[in-house]
Length: 161
Image (cartoon, rainbow, N blue to C red; front, side, top):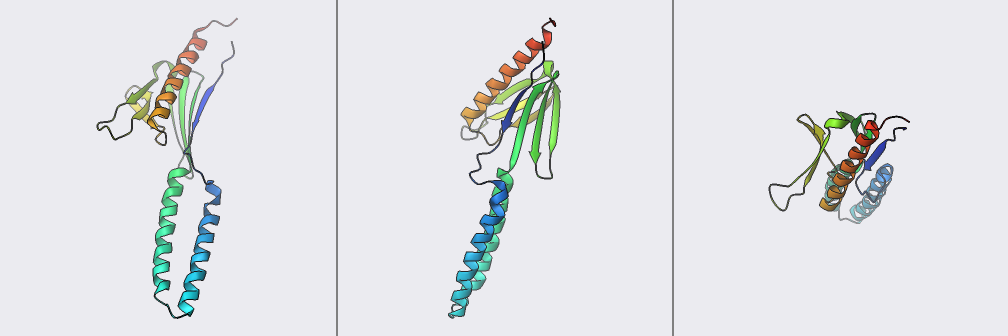
């Protein structure tokens, strides 16, 4: 029987595409500077330094939001291993675990207002995945990954026909 890979892709629900952030920020800066320069020309010169301060703060906040929203996690189950790939600009990482020893652990938080943690790993090495998901989505993903691991183990143990 031919092996079939199962892959789960996790990404934040970013309503604005990562490639469009510079355009968004550029339009905001342009409009704000036009207004501030016009007001400075009319004699309200104190508007200009505060506009620059506000735009600096806006650029920093947009960069933080962009960084938190522009990544992908892929969980792949195939070829006797479970692979987790964290794909982010200039910061990719990958972990692999043996299929038969891999475990999925949905840990309850220490405090009730904290979210659950979804961990995948084996032999004392754990990788947290799905930080952008809600608790219900984490629970569903944990069940789906467990089921995929069980199915892949079953496929691996079947004799070839």
